[in-house]
Length: 92
Image 1 (spheres, rainbow, N blue to C red):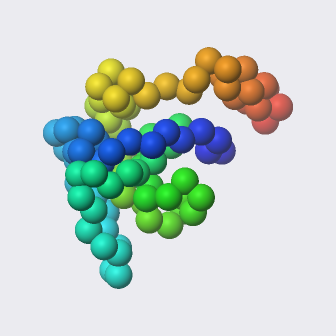
Image 2 (spheres, rainbow, N blue to C red):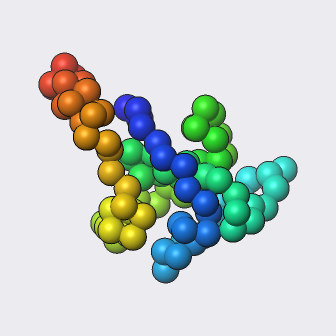
Image 3 (tube, rainbow, N blue to C red):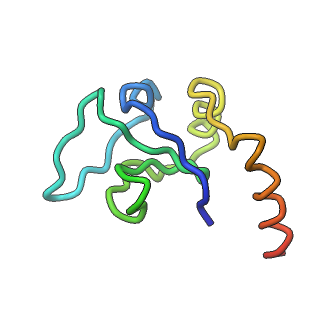
């Protein structure tokens, strides 16, 4: 279940050595200044509202996760971590 995403300029994500964008037919190319959204499952989308459409990146690897955590400083904010822990307890 995705519950948290953070906005980034695309140029920050393009720093990842293995980065490539999945552009669908009919979608415009994005510039470095385009805002995209990194979800808590480490996928990247064009819009936080329609997260199943406009997926730019879904190749979640340990290297990608490390890049997100160290270079982008991506993490779930402390005030939301408690909600995640409770959600996991309910589904277990």
